[in-house]
Amino acid sequence: MREQGHQPVIIFVTICAQRRKQIFAREEAVKAILGAWAEADAWAVGRYVILPDHLHLFCIPRRAEVSLARWSKYWKALVSRRWPWAEEQPIWQEDFWDTQLRQGESYAAKWEYVRNNPVRHGLVERPEDWPPAGEIEVLAWHDR
Image (cartoon, rainbow, N blue to C red; front, side, top):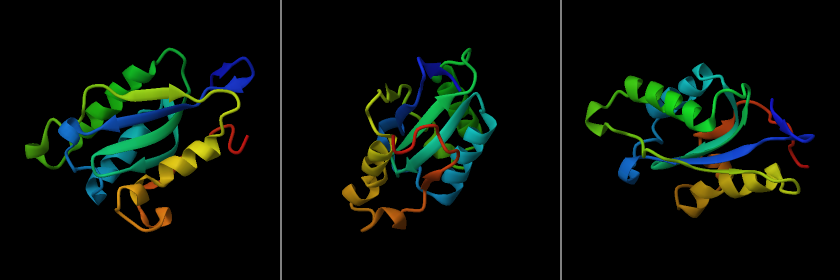
């Protein structure tokens, strides 16, 4: 893991479906995304939420030579190649939004906001009722 000073670098990322198509929150789509993250191991994915038209994830670099943009492009290409619904191609918005969590910001507080997205969008009544959400790897500074 790369650090800035003595603080781990945790990046919050939002990626949208092209034209905000409602295509991600299906079991096969979620499996394709999670599989691509596992294969594209230059960055580690921590907590994530996959919504119908966009997804949020927290990640940290494992290899400094692989930029977030390059990593994102790689795993999105993996998902696109394995996408079972050809008529939905292209599936990804080209760019993404990212922000580095700063010292003093709480990963847990950011996560609480993100995990409540399905509730705010009227998809479920409680965040725990939204299945395409979870944590793949424990990132460095929970609850700091």
